[in-house]
Length: 242
Image: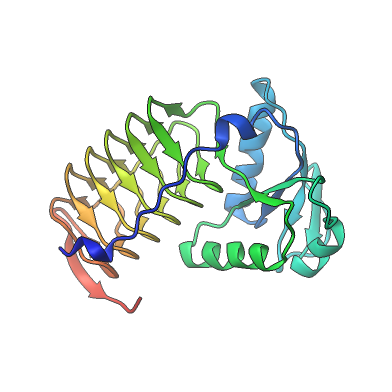
């Protein structure tokens, strides 16, 4: 496979510093994953790392009380809540599982031109993070997730419950590793890939940008960009446009 098709630009981890700063957090997306993120932030408080939740931002939800916080409304409403001064910091995390939708939401946040809206990296206290691991801004690491050593995770990724990433792996921006996904050593996963629940990527495999791996699949060979592969071993069943 031509590895020029795979975009991986990991950013140094922000989460250890972020979790010590009590800036208010905006959760972008009030669906199922948004509620999970909400519960993960509450878990940080239970482990002595309280983070104030400012509210949810969701274009498809009515503003009002939600759980123990608020739905602020959509992006137009958000602009009224966030002051333009740089010293009033707000963190945000995009809590939507669909990779393409998450990209669009991040772009919307960036187009608000608010210097004080900063992507926040969330690492659940029950996740295991090894030595020499970098996690890009805006990513979410769920409970039970294991990242071993010398791993690079890109921006705005979701590493879901009990997913694991082994040594020397590189995971691109906007990747979603579903629950129980296993990424073995020296694997490269391109930008915007979706790895289904319980799928396994064996060592030294490279997967191109935007590729979808079905639940329970076992990927034993390199895969190009923008395909869907399923089965054991995984076989390409569909090619789609970028």
